[in-house]
Image 1 (tube, helix red, strand yellow):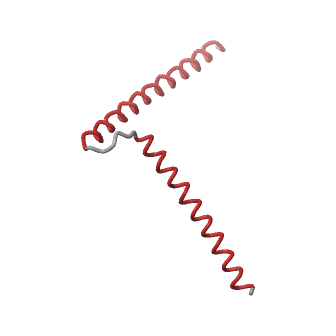
Image 2: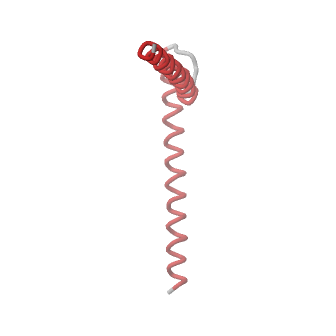
Image 3: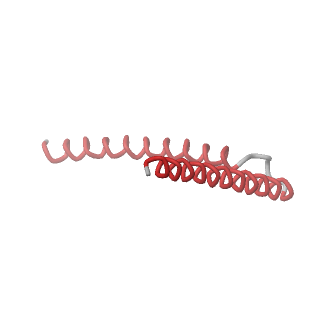
Length: 83
């Protein structure tokens, strides 16, 4: 009995690995298709990964700016109400 459970578990892991590989292939195919469409439209030849990285970088900068402004606002409120 123990062997059959091990075999089932091993088979399940192999199936999951196959599914992951299929998904990766589909994702790569979609990436290539998207990039070809963008090239035909005349946009710069960038991948979605590069575009997403730029968006994350901009998001980090905006979050930092919001944090700085909120700290300055708290300081101003403390000065106004305590003085």
